[in-house]
Length: 239
Image (tube, rainbow, N blue to C red; front, side):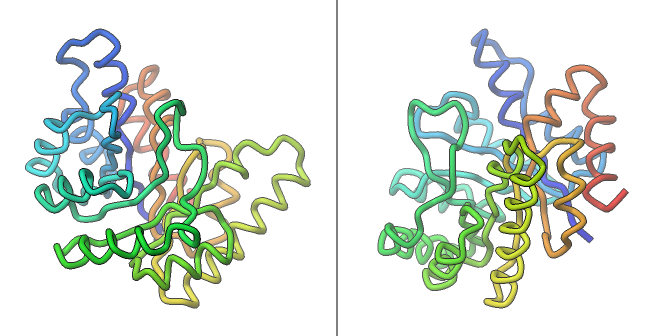
């Protein structure tokens, strides 16, 4: 049965907007776990726009389930990961000007760099996941560089407007799941998933963990973290 990983980046976004100490993403992570989340995800960006080094260090000490650290494939970030030793690192593309991650890694074109960073992380005892579009060549490249997992970027499916477009994107996700599992890769998914569009993805099967942030934090503002997480856990598990 699939698991839910809750991304608490946007709790930190609210905190950083005022430069104060609250709301605290570390507290939000604890509440998410109490509500049934089976993992916590944070993205430590190079510009530190939301999650801070302090947050990652405290989360490593307090998360009881599994800590997934999203980060760019840079020497600085790999060094931080090797010091903190999260349970999993998800390598993602990163641009300074983007509001959120806009697409998957181009693993094929950057295979030498990504293999180098993947090898270092693996040697440090860290599970490595690569955030990729549902593209067969990228999935094959992820396998070749030694990743344990891929995380399928579901943004194109979530942003599709027409029913036929959604079906096309859903088919790509299904094919990506099958290809990755055939290669022995674990499969996670995330980006843009909410309480409505996740149902069709869950119905495909084969995804081990969904990493979801914005929609859960947005709902938590209205109904509280406990209820927001419990509702998404039920959907992820096929409810």
